Amino acid sequence: MIRKTDRFLTRKGSVVEYSIAGQGEPILIMHGGHSNCKEEFGYRELAGQGYCIITPSRPGYGSTSKELGENALTACEAYLELLDFLKVPRVHVIAISAGGPSGIHFASRYPKRVRSLTLQSAVTHRWLTVDDTFYKSAQVMFRPSIEKGVWLLIRSMNKIFSDVLFKSMIPAFSNLGKDELLLQFNDDDKRQFGNMLNRQRSGHGFMIDLVQTSQNLESELSLIQCPALIMHSKNDGLVAVKHAYYAQQYIPNSELIILDTWGHLIWMGKDAADMHAKLFEFLKG
Image (cartoon, rainbow, N blue to C red; front, side, top):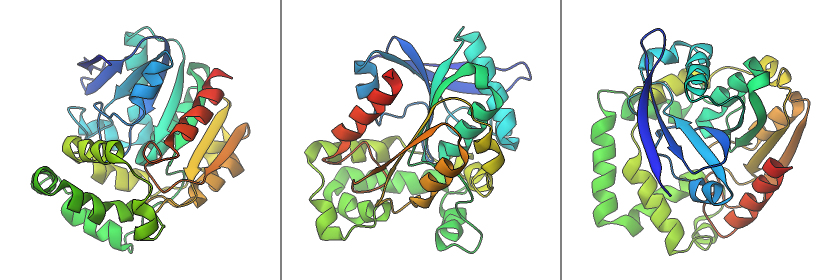
């Protein structure tokens, strides 16, 4: 799969880094936390089904200006400018994990530009609060002055002790017991997980995510007019499955698929092919 990466300058002078992969009907990806326009999960499968995948690095991630993260609508205006620049009239939107609010805001604000919305393991309402342990640790580990060293350490460990690191990190993504969990993966899954760790950075992006995922989105969800597919694992240990039920409650024209899969990264594991089949059925339908 050939991927082109470039930068776009908005009318207000902000930078949007983006990538384009594949050819065909366009899909706009709102990537998850600690990611960027070089995300890979699900891309090979989407390109193989004849889709053109457009991925902007969200505010504060990659080379995209952190100022665009002032609020979700400012970022959505930049995404719209990017689509206009690329001469793309309408897109399917796939919003992943902490990218959920970005996809929800875009679909609700620009209904004529969105063919469908798919939420995958997505945050759809208030996620973390200042009292949560993960919130407190994230404020330390992933602040812009420290995160580069944190990810450098993780990548160094991944290079030397990849199997040990996989076994120690993967339980955070699932509610399954560790013994049952480890049976879900083959060597290719472990390779994908290692590649994820090698490309991840937080920049200013994850601090922006912590702010934008602290809000309830029922008004935005209720304004979505396009067909919507909500996909979530019942065993997600990072973004609870209640986020999926919440989205279905408020999106008028939505289909909910609760996956009996291992956890948050639904593109990995022995049931990933079934997830992709359900996604393609929705997109083509």
